[in-house]
Image 1: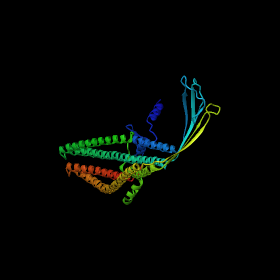
Image 2 (image 1 turned 135 degrees about the horizontal axis):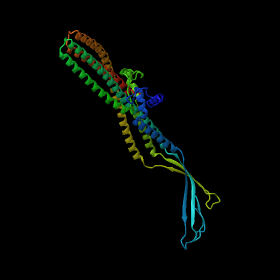
Image 3 (image 1 turned 90 degrees about the horizontal axis):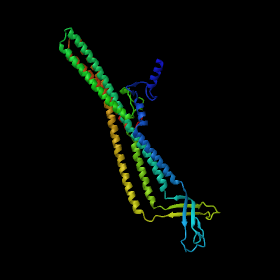
Image 4 (image 1 turned 90 degrees about the vertical axis):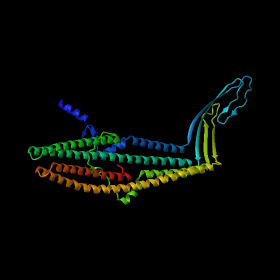
Length: 441
């Protein structure tokens, strides 16, 4: 019975293959890469973008359908009758697709006209091919828009994931501070019991421990808020388990700053989208120019009634040429509008390039500054540890006051928090540069 219960519990607590083997508070331990992969497949915004891409693919198929001839079957029904006293029709009447037979004064005639029609546009001045090209350009535009959305979403997920990891690291710092404050309280109590220190030291140690626990609870609340925001952004319950230095450790190294802008201009989907818009607008100019070109179309029809019927089978074909006489003013006005739109898109692209260049420069500056701060803060943490241990020994020996130990512990706690913040800033600067270079997960 116990074995059966163990098997049922194991099945209930089974974790999907894309997650780790541990579950904490109903959350699955997801690495950053797994969180990004989940969001990429299930986020509603990306699903909507993929649906728009599918719509663009359907429009491409619709445009290609214009190259296929139109084929249809049509059936008509007509009635003919003569009023009393009307003169009969002595001879049959040829109506093209069918023949109306002779009638008598009292005869009613029901005529069926089944036929098969074929129509095809032989030449339209290039408008049909340009329509296909425009729909394909629209497809490329939606693909670029999807990549842009994914780039922005992945950056925000990376940023929020990084924020959760930072809050967890700061929580560890506060937990260590609580441990040190607890040790200091024990030391103060021992010194007071031994009569080597006044009662005030124990009261101050208790106040310090209470303040450390309060700071720990505040940091825990900040962690939970960041956690909830990350889960809402990813769309799955998750538990990030990583250190700041471990995030995206397998990502390709960043290029030199001098090459970063060139790489960004070549890879950014939003720049490609703007360039694609210019191509579409230039195609639109060509479409407008073809309004003055003639068109040539072919139409064929044949009746579907056998030769033994009163209506005999017949085939007819026609060739139609259409030449526009005066649309020049409308074409010129349309082209003026398109050229203005092209100018607008070009200026947007220039502004976007300047924005990307500024973001890359500021990202590299922030990265260099954060790297320098990490090195400095690491040294300060080591110095603060030595100062704390020295203050602890001095207090135990009765040389110093408890206030010196409190100050040394506060300095060590602040140095550790500053180091974690510097590591966070360094990693965030890396993510910002990766986002500008569109290094997608």
